[in-house]
Image 1 (cartoon, helix red, strand yellow):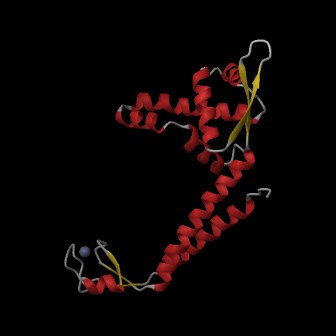
Image 2 (cartoon, rainbow, N blue to C red):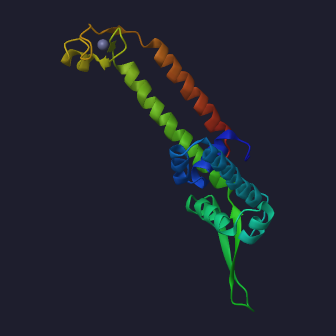
Image 3 (cartoon, rainbow, N blue to C red):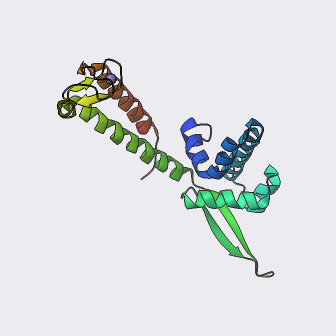
Amino acid sequence: MLDDPLVQDLLRKIIDDPEDHQGAKKSKSKKSKKNDDKDLDNMLIVQCLNKGVKTDEEIAEKTGIRLNIVRKILYRLYDAGLASYKRHKDPETQWYSYDWKFEPEEVNKTIKKQINDEIEFLKNILDNEKDNMFFSCPEGHTRFDFEDASNVGFTCPECGEEVVFEDNADIIKELEKDIKKYQKIYDSIEVSE
Ligand SMILES: [Zn+2]
């Protein structure tokens, strides 16, 4: 399951630190390579958790990643609802320990929701394309529906060329293809109710 590109995308968005990437953009390639390695490390934590390794100490030991980073990633997963933990109190030392658990079911649910949002987004665009006529500048500067094209007197505000009717059949075909593709992925992800 963790090999699935969709799953990896979702997990990376959650576990990778966006501030690290900003830093990487500002500095040169040497550092961004370092950040790539770090992101790979973050995935090791998830893999470890998914295999049933329970505590942050064990994960740190098995992955060789610093304990404070392991904890940070675990809490990011927890915040996203993709991991849970149980707290135990050691009767002798009175210390708390945490047993962590990965929630693959929640990963699937979150991905399904994201795909569904994408489908809704594309359907809105599709409806708009089907319900309207479009006029575009021959130079490719602008594209208007009928009302907006009327408002600019059917001339491109950028270059003054006349905007011409655009057959959007191909755009509609592409959108329908994309929606079908997403729908297929959506249907293939099983979640129990
Ligand atoms: Zn133009």
